[in-house]
Image 1 (cartoon, rainbow, N blue to C red):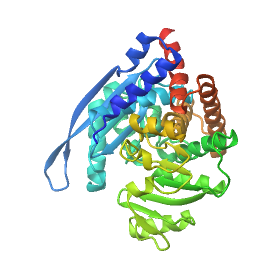
Image 2: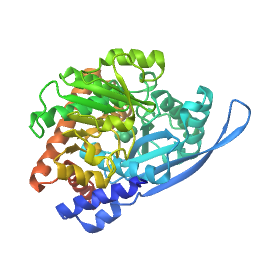
Image 3: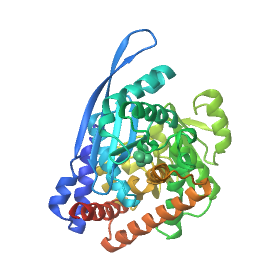
Length: 410
Ligand code: GLU
């Protein structure tokens, strides 16, 4: 099934707008990005031949502050995906209440097929094309799927050269050596677990210690989510990467899995676990399902088969509109992406702030601040969820839209 994420995003907003009777003109305006660009990036490959890559940057809304959002490297990147992701960033930033609007970028590439040199030239080439429309007060990119602190470092360096602007605050998610913040790497995963903790505490779902968790994905987000949820006493029983997943109903030891992935290069064939497909992982008999990879993995095709009581969306846009309706009918609680994974951009804001003020905060300071801020976001969303007797997704949209519309009106 081919689901357009940009259509999904617009329908999610429309649903919330009708529930809370939001200003129809402003809502209509919010359905479209302010602007987006498509760029072609010539890269000299190691074999001496030039290859042209296509990249995008979408700037959705800046009523609450500079456009802000990551850059994704993936073979399936396309304009509608980038537009949807920039849209979700505006709402995410408003939910977690950081003074940013929403933006997102992407390049159509499988970075695993490039050498380090090719990757650096591609990253610098992208910045050569978009540097006039980014900057600390204009648009602040960050990592997303398949992009890293190292890539942000190359991009920052290229930006500084092209723009004669030496500010480090144009990019976040940088490595510590190039102006990054303590705690940024952990932020998205830990942030999701801080929200999860309060979902359990407020008895939205009954989840005693020992409840089973399946996580789809094995990148930065899932790594820290798995570690933190294990610490709370929950059992991570399944994990997956792009090549497939592993499952052991008695639980997986995260450290052992990590060691296996490092030596074998993939999760599959981990001793003491069964190999499963990514699709099978989603349908396992678990209490909590955590999609932490790409969008549209939960659709009308598999929603009826999902057994979890709680879905924590650590990926952006993992659930289609059809699946959402099925989950609501089945009483499965969905903690939406724009709340669950907002810890990353929240600490991006702290990084930007530290760069602007030439400050440097400790990891403890950063994570404490993150915990307070994201738990407040959950409380704000929960309040609207009860007030409007609606889903957490619509409640999060209502909260965010109220904040963005206020700023637009001002
Ligand atoms: N790519 C992350 C996200 O989707 C982080 C964005 C940022 O830090 O700007 O939320």
